[in-house]
Image (cartoon, rainbow, N blue to C red):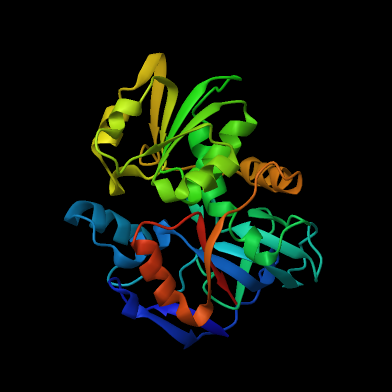
Length: 310
């Protein structure tokens, strides 16, 4: 089968279109013919692996030394069940599904930069939302699960003020919608060109982080949610960490290891089918142009998700 192999850590030139062995499902697995996947910020970080020495060593213990242990990256899948193991009861051949290749910090599986992938039936795998295309379904799991992880650390009541820093990215666009569904009054931090987007998703107030003295627009918030982590900063971001009410809380995507439980995944499916959340797609590339997609994601200005069709 065709797949994109990461031959070694480093630049996008190390992502090479290759022919690899088609996987065969184990007894508890389904074989999915992939129709779409996505390039996430996490994918680019794993590919580059240009962290300081100690974090880099730890990451290589997890992913492999010199090059990824599994050279086919990607954790987001949408596609069609082509075959299944003899113990599988939740899915049938022909089912249209979507998935995220992690169910816990110790159970993760890469491999969606390819024509096929095998996944256990009890992982973050479900029938695709009936109202979404394969491309749209591939734009849900990464941002949706990480946004759910952030909001799990809150106890939002209707009317609570929430500031989301990095509101126009894959995590931020989902965080807006999920927090709005919980009843929050949302202030989004992004560039002015993304104001209409975040407003359409439920943002009540927008702050352009590129403006001088943007921090003067800050109020106080029950929760300040940092959806970009240490990869980006500004004077506004530094000030926002203290723009909290007396019992307020600052929550960053870089705090702790994200958890991605199946109940959160299934909740995203339900909300998508109810049209309470909608995926945001910036660009769509074919598998053969995945290096170009990585370059675009690395620029740090994507709106929502970058999807790959296969």
